[in-house]
Image (cartoon, rainbow, N blue to C red; front, side, top):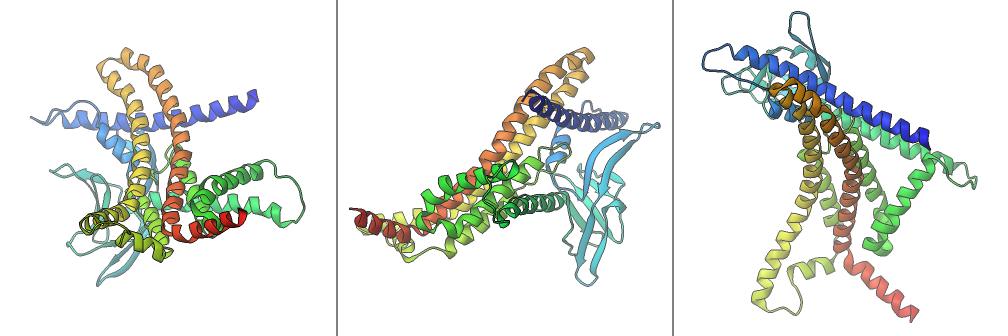
Amino acid sequence: MGIKRLYSLFVLAFALFGASFKVAAQAEGNHESAATEAAAPHEEKKGINITELVFGHVSDSHEWHLFSLKKENGEEKPVAFPLPMIIYQPGKGLTVMSSGHFEEWHKTADGKAISNEHEGLYIEKHMKEKVLATDGSKVYDFSITKNVLSMLIGVVLLLWAMTSAAKKYKTGTQVAPKGFQNFIEVVIVFIRDEVAKPNLGDKYLRFLPLLLTVFFFIWINNLLGLLPGGANFTGNIAVTACLALIAFIVMMANSNKHFWSHLLNPPNVPFLVKCLLVLIEVMSLCIKPVALMIRLFANMLAGHIVILSVICLIFIFALLNVYVGSGFVVVSLAFSIFMFMLELLVAVIQAFIFANLTAVFIGQAIEGDHSHEHGHDAAAAH
């Protein structure tokens, strides 16, 4: 048991030092660029751009940037690998190329970073990256970005985990599950007994695959985002919006007359109160997917920002005094380890909450069906 704990601590320390090294390399580069810009009159700048560092990590991009190394001449050499870009322009057709063609960057007067041009295209990076055409024409971007690649990796890991655990059941031998299979079975039974059955009643088997897929998909991608250089996939509001939309569509597709009758025509309610109640219920129906979307997005994004901000405090104090910065390393890393452990817990909690709320909303839409069946069962029991 001691060896396992020591190994876990080593992995955690490696992850945090990896993240610290990445931020340190980026901070050093930003500090040097700020010093260069300070040579211009009336444009004196000092320090590191924390906003650029943090949001550069949590935002999506067309390349997977790991860290930057300093060359002998003082310039930065980014350690990153380009990703495939798939661009469609009306009248020009489909263009497939590597994002490695857009390596040179410069800043415009309004502070936006602009890449070099290639085949009439360039990338604008402010809070996010956007592919634009030099002639101002419409551009449709279907590129494999950092978040998309992270999602594909998460899907592969999910399929591997489920299929590897299911293979042992196909053998037909009655052997007690152990190891990874036992872990997967415990989680599945937990979601079935604590999420699906209480909220969906006798129809839980119909929606259990959806709940399990949502839970494991979010959990795996939450954990991938905590790795050094990992993508903030579930901290992207477009991702959580798609997940919430799927849950909302399933809820609407399985809603029954009982649900709509109580929503649009509440029984035993005065007419004026009924008009107000219907408005509130319709607004509540629309707010449900929004709550799912914002809850997951905000929690995961906040965790990444807090960890990166705590690490950046080292370099903020180092700019004031080298010895103060060195002394703050211990405090910063200790707090980073605490936040990292907390994020490991948040990763599974947020996956559970999303799956649980999805089951609650679907259960409300089919409430008349399984509550009626439970009524018959209770009457038969008496």
